[in-house]
Image (tube, rainbow, N blue to C red; front, side):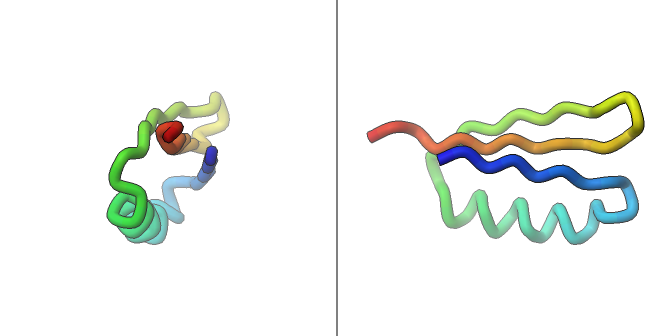
Length: 50
């Protein structure tokens, strides 16, 4: 499973709450982030294959 979340700085508080819930629900998840030139940030979560 792959999940991509994009957010702006104004949405950061909501993003942090959602991220914490996802990480608690998906214990063996890989994550990385990036920032687009326009300031939009993205978090990528990938579950490990069984």
